[in-house]
Length: 176
Image (cartoon, rainbow, N blue to C red; front, side, top):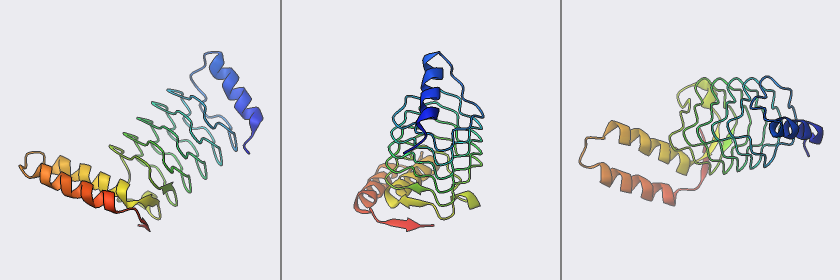
C-alpha cells in the first residue's frame, strides 16, 4: 500500500484549488483513483507511486520520475510525459491516447492492452527498448503510421481493414 499521508496532502491541496504539484516528493504515494485532471506534476518524484485508475487527463508529468510507478487503468489522455523517466512503469489497460513521450525513458515499461492511439512514442530510440506491450497496441500505432503515409491512397480502407483484422487476432506479448 502506498503512502497515505502524501495522498491526504495531495487531496487537501487540490480541494484548496491548487493546480500544481510541481517538483513534489511523492515517492510511494497512494494516488490511486484520484482526479488529477490538468494538474501540473512536472518534475515530481513519483517513483513507485500507486496511480492505478487515476484521472491524469491533460496533466503535465514532464520530467517527472515515474520509475516503477503503477498506472494500471489510468486515463492519461493528452498528458505531457516529455522527458520523464518511466523505466519499469506499468501502463496496463491505461488510456494513453495522444500522450507525448518525446525524450522519455520507457525501458522495461509495460503497456499491455494500453490504448496508445495517437501517442508520440520513442519507437526508434533506446527509451523504448525492452518495453512490454500488446501487439494490438503496436499494430494500432503501425496502422496510424500507415494511415498518415497513405492518406491519398485509394486502398486506405482495405489496408485499415487488414490491420484491424490482424490486430484483433493478435494478443500475445513480445519484447522489442
